[in-house]
Image (cartoon, rainbow, N blue to C red; front, side, top):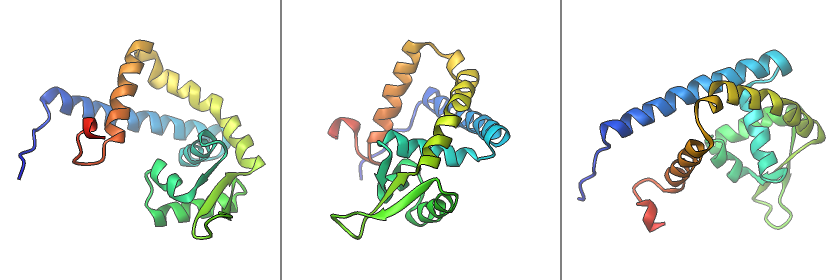
Length: 156
């Protein structure tokens, strides 16, 4: 069995800082959206993921992008659908696949939430890093995100 190299103390501290920042930014977004639009931050996350995908995406992609399990994603989408924010339709080329599409109401809500979220992001994160630092962080996190567990990024 190949021995696994342990992360350096700086990498452990960076990961811990990432977790703390994520929690505080997510909490601030949630509080802001609840106060201003009456929606939880998780709803915004879902709507913006679908918007970033061009307004429509497969259910499996949605589950992956939002880090939900397949059954968790189904229950979550049920709530969004009941609120009239998304529509779930069978894919015309593969009836086993469901396509999620933002409704006009969902798109309007996502766009109304954008300025609130962007303001919170700047206040709780953006103002503490330069554009160059943001680029370094983005590249490192993309490499980590794209690497399947146990596979070296260079092997992808």
